[in-house]
Length: 418
Ligand code: GLU
Image 1 (cartoon, protein in one colour):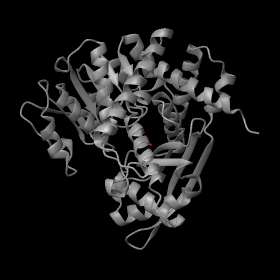
Image 2 (tube, protein in one colour):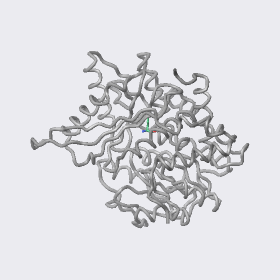
Image 3 (cartoon, helix red, strand yellow):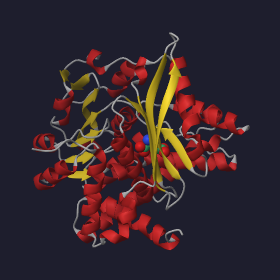
Image 4 (cartoon, protein in one colour):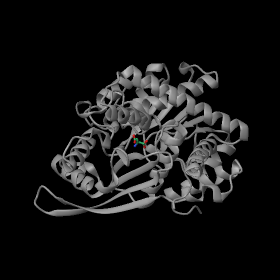
């Protein structure tokens, strides 16, 4: 019987395994088994009907060893402290694998944002920002979008922080709209990073995009962009899904048509195409394809799902979609997996571009941003690839090993204060 999933326990299990695999004793990485700081806030909001509701919010800062903390803010009804702790730790590891000078953090509010009016969402965001204000800032901790938040929410965070300081401080948050200091290329960045890794891996396996079929779970900002860009590269996207369910077509879906359908918030369950069949989310994960891209939430590929996967390669676009137990099943079954902290780093890499532009009051063109993204993603893949080869370990353990070594080296140089 597998015990109840705990995202932070999952992180620790993989961390311990990776450290062991590269011969790093626990005392060398003990400190990063713990988040540096955890803040819980109770966020009161005046609702449109005049009543007051109080929402549970968090900001967890996992590590500052390699630079200021960086990481998104999630609005979702399942947000809990262990999830936010894990997401924060994954950010430290992701930034280390990408080699960008940040530690990791994550925030979250336990709320289903689709149940709030725009005014309620704005008041919730501004009050939450005020409550985490002492620990965020362009040199301290820089939030960004995640599941359930978007550029508008980031704009409100920037404005609230700026108003409370008396002047405009765009570098406090990334993923903003262009008009208020956002970066070209940021909206597509995570999906583009997934596409870059996928193309590089196909190249390593000597496969042409036309030869592979892809299934994507989750059609939000990450999954839909990854599907679009891979489709443009010539891959056959045989299945996609959102919360409402999925659709499958062996000869390949018309992705521009799916995107046109979902653009105004319409669901995939209401999409139809000749020759396509409706499937549920579970069927999507186990559908026959070459590459499976989970781009929704954590804890999707469990041990049981892993036994039934019908793909050759998993490319994680979500954070934490595969459990540590499922990893073992994939290894046994010979299914390769490219891990989240490598493959979905595109978002934070372009967040880094945005932050650098904000600090210097510069604006880069989109080619410049995309070129840097390509360079960082391919370099990170090479680092992970070599580590996996040198130690004969999975790409997951290799990515963790690269990250833990980089974080611990920085830590060792700095020493422990006092
Ligand atoms: N929320 C995204 C992630 O999980 C982006 C974080 C950022 O840009 O800081 O990587």
